[in-house]
Length: 263
Ligand SMILES: NC(=O)c1ccc[n+]([C@@H]2O[C@H](COP(=O)([O-])OP(=O)(O)OC[C@H]3O[C@@H](n4cnc5c(N)ncnc54)[C@H](OP(=O)(O)O)[C@@H]3O)[C@@H](O)[C@H]2O)c1
Image 1 (tube, rainbow, N blue to C red):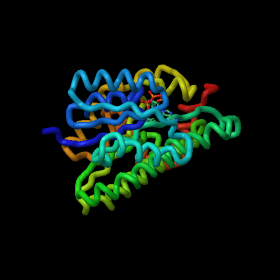
Image 2: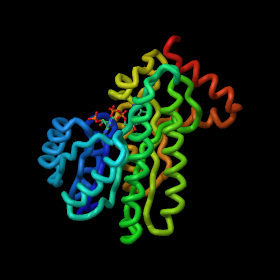
Image 3: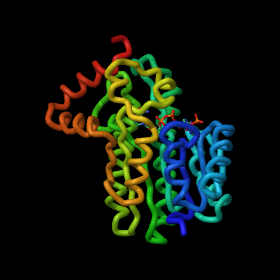
């Protein structure tokens, strides 16, 4: 018997989300794959069902539109006949540059995607999970959630929300037997950086992890139930430790130097 009945995963068409779908598909009866690119979701659904015998559904949706998360949740229940007992909120984008220059509409949509849709899906999933006294949510934050990020200010702030919100939910959910985990990757080699127009450099290449390794670490934490905060890679753990020892303004200044697209 598989461990989960229904996995709902956003951001499944590429990168970390796609790899998490592969890592968790053997553990679930149904998997609902959400992102905008329908062709990629359909190809993935086909591959997952052939390889793992899972019922896989492609559910194309733009989660940067207010109200879409509720539609996705309702449609998931329609497809699999029940609410998810495993929810992975992975979909996210970022934009790089001076806050005054990045188009406002792009960043407002980013906040809807990274913050609002994630929060709405958590709220919708928690009630039925509490009623059944079981379930797991994995929210994808970032090491960016731990400090301000000049030149990616709104993205870093959105991930600070995800981190804080998820850790607070974990505390609320524990008495109900429901677990809320937070994945905080460092730099991962995905399309994210292309869409974010973020800087490529020697340091970033050196620190990059593969989406597969990050996904497997997240999947292992889900199956074991710990750690609640997953920071993949020894270098990322060391950086976070160092950041705790430095004054916050120093960390902000150094982060700005690292992210400044002109340098
Ligand atoms: N890569 C990194 O260095 C890194 C580091 C820390 C945290 N993260 C976080 O990890 C998560 C996954 O990123 P990734 O690196 O795997 O990037 P990615 O390869 O670009 O994947 C992003 C996923 O989100 C989906 N998505 C984007 N906009 C969407 C929208 N409006 N509605 C629905 N789905 C949307 C994309 O699919 P469609 O384009 O088909 O919609 C794709 O499946 C993000 O939350 C990101 O913030 C990434």
